[in-house]
Length: 70
Image (cartoon, rainbow, N blue to C red; front, top):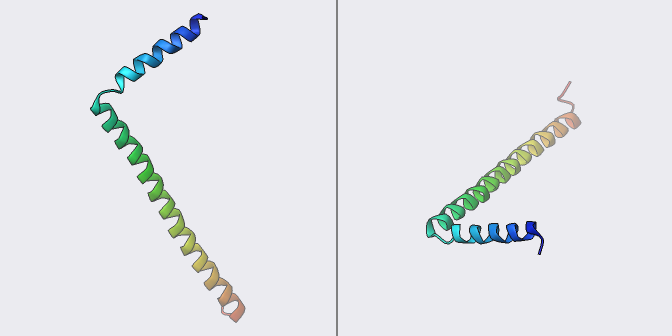
């Protein structure tokens, strides 16, 4: 077996040992949860701003049709 494959297998074994502790799983869960919540917040902000921009555009188009914009 090539040396690089052996090293890769040994590294994987070390990672498995490191992530067996409950604290590691809790930390990993918190990090993943934070990333998901942060992306959800950014998505909601984008949707809110998009809706606001659509409202302003609609008002502008109506005002332009009515001739109230110079």
